[in-house]
Image (tube, rainbow, N blue to C red; front, side, top):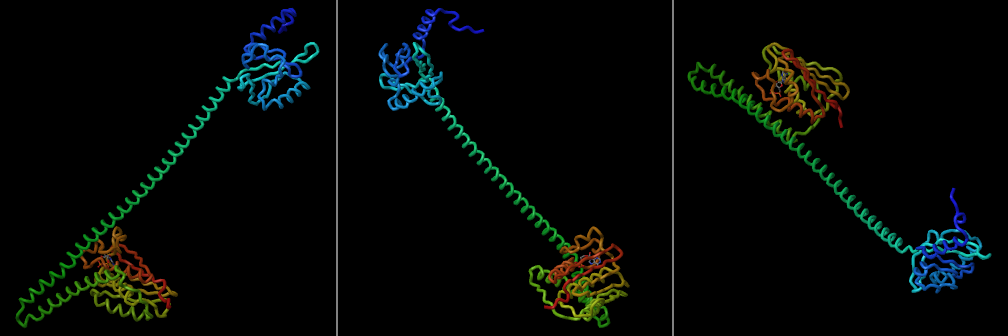
Length: 424
Ligand code: ADP
């Protein structure tokens, strides 16, 4: 159990102890009466405020309060007298006391009170907080400086982050561009490769297809030169026919080149007119039968509507002549060729079917490429241009072509013109 000083000291001892504490305290102690008149000041308080011993006695406590706060201090003092309690003064406020030399001293004050001879006396404990204030101010400054530093650093970091993001964006853009360039380079390479492929196909086609008729012409011409007598007329005629046929072949090749060139350059226009499909088809049959091998027959049948079609005659002629002459060319002696046209509403479907050599499966996907020729067609005269011309012509007419083929069994080419009767 804690014991109070009364338990240990006599009254006299107590007084002596209090006096000694009062005198030796490193804390200002000022005792004033209820009117605020200073009764006692300990040495530390005198030193704190710059007064000589006894100089403050009898003065109003407001002598130690800055001028502009004296009135309010008096009213606080009266409040304290009405309701005295031990407490700190000006809690949460910065308190200043007035020194004798007129300067201000930052202080912390606690108040207490007691009764002596029936009168209230108030004790003020005054601590000099100059050092604490200084440290607080330094701390505040340090804090502000740190905050500023943190702010600056944050700014720097966000700047760096933004730059990084920008760099990232630039890098992404660069990568995109590189990718694009790669794609373009790849496409250019692809075009180059296709062109080379085309060139080599052309060279092999030209060397093959020109050489045969040219050498035929050469040998026939030199043989004709040898036949002088009228009796050789039959032989001469035979060689002249060979020359004519060879020239015909060369002319056809050149015509194919010209047609394709015109189509490629967009010089061919789709110019539809109205005409009778049956008459037109029968005319074509007659024309191609001149090319037929012995026993070959082209059988034309038509189905569906009998109304006139509205198409570009030249383009349709070129499409069907190519398909029919191929059917004849790639089928053997005595084979039948079916040529079927069917008009259903505005849609015209034409099928050319043969029982010829067919197209090897591996070659089928290249069939419409310029100069392409299937492997099994090498011994048969051709340029590899016809189907390309067919496809381009159908594109112009708004139609398309499909085919089915089995090697050694035959092929069927189907042309579809969805708007064959669409008169303006
Ligand atoms: P060409 O007949 O002058 O070679 P095309 O472009 O008309 O050129 O045909 C390309 C190739 O398609 C031919 O070389 C041939 O290999 C193949 N082909 C076309 N039509 C037929 C067909 N009816 N039967 C078999 N093969 C065909």
